[in-house]
Length: 175
Image 1 (tube, rainbow, N blue to C red):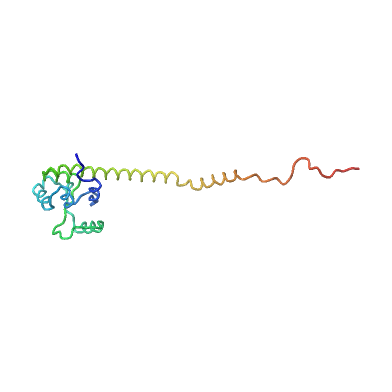
Image 2 (image 1 turned 135 degrees about the horizontal axis):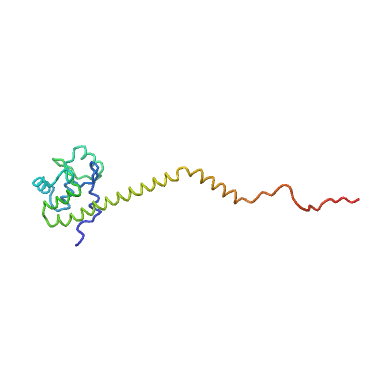
């Protein structure tokens, strides 16, 4: 199967809203090769398939926040608030559209969501390990400095003693 849409392009259209990774209706419609109006109509005809954990309507404040995050916004003349689709909602949207392109592209959408989850997991694991290292070596700074000082002292040449021991070869008492 030829790669229809680069996963990276899809990743750029996934946002965090209400603590969830979502795609907006217009981005999903573009990927699925339909207009936003067609996508929204298909969804509204099948609302029973879209519980709140699959799709939700954004608030005006959430739209404002997203616009400030996205430098190149093309949301100019929308008359209604956009819908946000979770990973499961994006798959369900493809199934209610029932077009071959939507079904094919939905595979890439799922892969993009999965890749982002994996990245978050890796970052979480790295952060945990870093915190563990910081905690482990927190009190060791002074000990490490003392160790370096001891090593430096061992590397310094010994100081000559002031009193010389042994035959000095000097004055003899003759009588």
